[in-house]
Length: 132
Image (cartoon, rainbow, N blue to C red; front, side, top):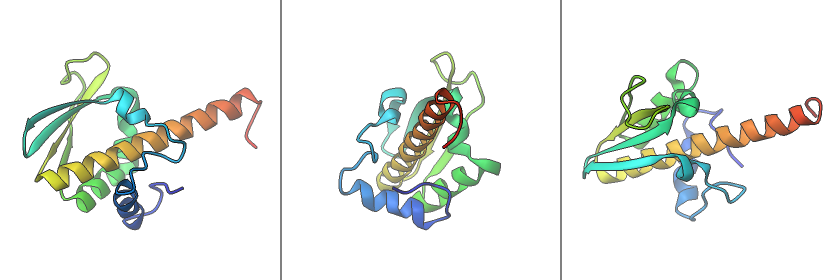
């Protein structure tokens, strides 16, 4: 399994892994269940993402966001709170050519799935009375 703790190569692995139709190591795709996608045109999509998980897309000092933009080639804009129609959601816009947008979306899905798996593991550890 890979994570986004590294720079560059890890996100490229996401692209090659997707070609093999693998959504996540556990077979679950949390991101697909929480993201609402709206195609604006061929060069722009908007995603509604729960505010509680947007921080994972940004990453520390917006490093993850910068990696996604650099490696996918698409512009990713995380809008301020209150811009998405759904309450408790944030609007994230992806702009670029079709391939760049697809790659950016795959990377965002990967970041969200990894973060949810991390949170689930942390909750299990806390339920057991600590980390192992």
